[in-house]
Amino acid sequence: MALQRPTGKRAPGLLNIAQPPNHKEEMNNVWLDCDPGHDDAIAILLAIHLRNINLLGVSTVHGNADAKNSAANAARCLYAFAAAHVVRVHPGASKPLLRPVRHDSEIHGADGLGGVEGLPTVADAGVHARLLPDADHLTAIEALARAVRQSWQGGRGQKVAVVACGPLTNVALFLSVYPELLEGVEQIVFMGGGIGVGNRSAAAEFNILCDPEAAQVVLDANVPKTMIPLNVTHQAIVTKAIHARLLRGTSTDADGAAPTKASTNLRHTLSTLITFFKDAYETTFRFKDGPPIHDALTVAYVSDPTLFTGKRYRVDVELHGTHTAGETVADVWGYRACDGSWGATGKNCFVALELDVPKFMDLFLDCVAECDKVSPLNHQA
Image (cartoon, rainbow, N blue to C red; front, side, top):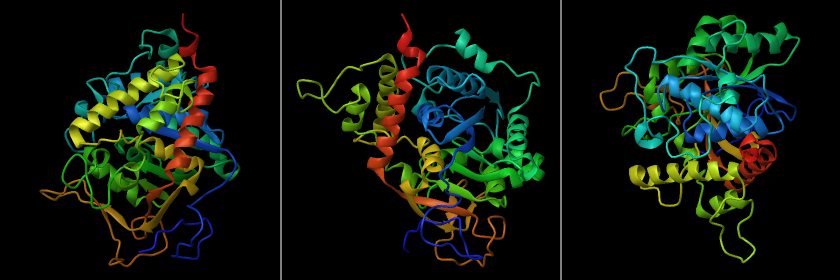
């Protein structure tokens, strides 16, 4: 089947070729739900420094590490990457809707950001401030609901893109508790799943495997959704050449050799992040060229969906299979009759399948350069 970029202009039930759903050039209001996680950290950096992203807030969820570490890591990243002071962390679900909780210390270390040097701890005043509850003491889903309500203003304002980099528990709870706010959600973009490939079972990707029931709730919601699966995230490899550019902002030093030392504290921190992630992926998955920075693609998609090519499918999650629980099943041959909706009876998900890797890596490194100008890490004694 030919790969397509869908447009926002759609005939009923059809998907035209041009660019992905809801593509627009103006500022995008974004809520980020994550479980940092090395690649989540890069997603946070992009959400802060992409010029057409307005980061409204961050919620955290169980996943790569436990809920306490996820929240702490998000706060550490918000501070280190110089997010606006009003952006704070709202801790969310500590376990899946129905299943036992699981974490991934083999890939991310015990605290979720294993091996990363230079990030301040939660004892730092700048980090601690991001974790303090606001005056209303809102939970993750309450804070997301408030952000959508204030942005959308009952149709007078702007819709919000919900971006999810971890298990979909928080997003499923939000959709279930606040169905009246669905009209204020422009799209849900999530990293998860795979078409014919898994990474934490023979068939399932980790984020979906952690809470498959939540993923199905999200897939059934009648709002445009984009799935960023392993098929495309495994193309976003931080190679030695990209790592060299990360270290100094260039591919070579003055003598023409590849740089081995970071030019700033921020770049050193990011280099240690990539190095730990690389080693984990080489040991566990035999990735030789470098680690895939999965979660960063979600934010990149909202900023510039033309980086991606894919197709709209009916996607469901296997909930009962002995060997396939958590698998995302895309009806690539169109066996199921679907209407034009994005919900339980329609082709409910645009699935990204190809990435313009050079342009994405340029976007990532441009954000690092912007962050370099303002990161408090570069002003430490």
